[in-house]
Amino acid sequence: MLTNLQINSRRLWDSLMDTAKFGGTDRGGIKRLTLTDEDKQVRDWFKAQCEALGCTVSVDEVGNMFATRPGRNANLPPIAMGSHLDTQPTGGKFDGILGVLAGLEVLRTLHEHEYETNAPIEVVNWTNEEGSRFPPAMLASGVFAGIFPPEYAYAQTDREGTTFLSELERIGYRGSMKSGDHQLSAMFELHIEQGPILEDEKKSIGIVTGVQGMRWYEINITGQDAHTGATPMYLRRNALLGAARIIEAVDAIGQQHQPGVATVGLIENKPNSRNVVPGEVFLTVDLRHPDETALDKMEAELRAALKTILPPLKLTYDEKKIWASAAVNFAPELIACVRSAAAKSGFPMRDMVSGAGHDAAYIARVAPTTMIFVPCEGGLSHNEAESTKPEECAAGAQVLLDAVLAYDQSLAGHT
Ligand code: HGY
Ligand code: MN
Ligand code: MN
Image (cartoon, rainbow, N blue to C red; front, side, top):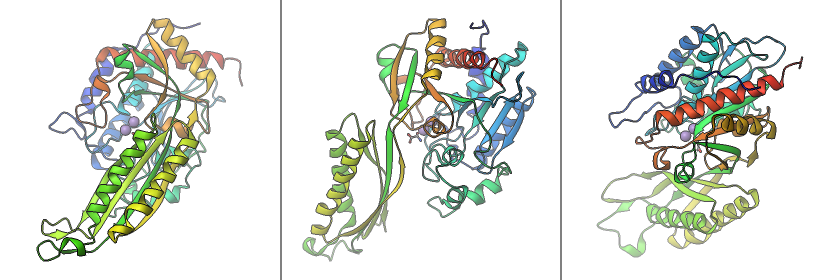
């Protein structure tokens, strides 16, 4: 039986707007890279808000935060609502943040109505979902799911050579709890869609059935620094020219394998001087597709492109795959809870697979997991102009509350 508890839309929106000041940019976005001072500020705020509700907040060895509200049956592992508070360098106010703050709104709603659940209910802030500062993405949920050992995360460095561990310790969020020891009954992740489908179809709720496969590569291209005035064209070994042709080839791979996507997102050109023929380029490639076989083909075509394009330009290169997250399907019993919750409120909905990666993709390997999407304006995300409406956030939070309580009721009688 579904309850009549209603989340407080105004309170949720105020929290979203208030916390946007932690790393807020003058273009209305958020720059809150993982494990920076700004990340610490929002973590401290989140911890205080949850403790004020009587929750215990525990932190694991890679900084994942678990704010737990007790339930009737302490033997049941918590039902989690999780996402991330770190952002891209030019991030928006909602990517990840909506999922954590909507979870907080659910806790606040349960608290003010003194509603007792069967299982403990918790909100999780997963460290370094973005993978922008310390690759790969979803790093700490990956440690929790046993994909990466904690030492792998600790050793990751940003482009300045600073390690994940040194920053985790510096901001005081290296917890003592072993990551992954903390069992979960389930995890629900609310997130903006970060694409245009829901808005285009005027749907309020995305019933997310899974996440597509994703792979990241790092490529170094080596030529020779030379004088732009004195070096004839036929004698050049121009690494940036090679990079330009690889960028074109990567885009062509994405075009040919739609709905797959392919992107060069990060490039470093050295020495990056206006009168030096560039001798070295570092670039990254991001390939994604719902089907792993198609991803294999895209990967093979990337490697073939490197082999055919660079040697004729007298360039050498090295390429390494630094990350692969296989396509994942979510738990049917949780998807059913989301569907019934959306139906209860009469929200128009549609099933979909996530194009973006999320912590839920890894948590699904160790606990029943699913996601809920809400639309964002123009499908824009990873952009300071990212936005959505209070009523969209409220609809997502209401469905999150009702889905969690529906699942909690299904656990009644479980010991
Ligand atoms: O890369 C992703 O899809 C996620 O935003 N980290
Ligand atoms: Mn996200
Ligand atoms: Mn993101």
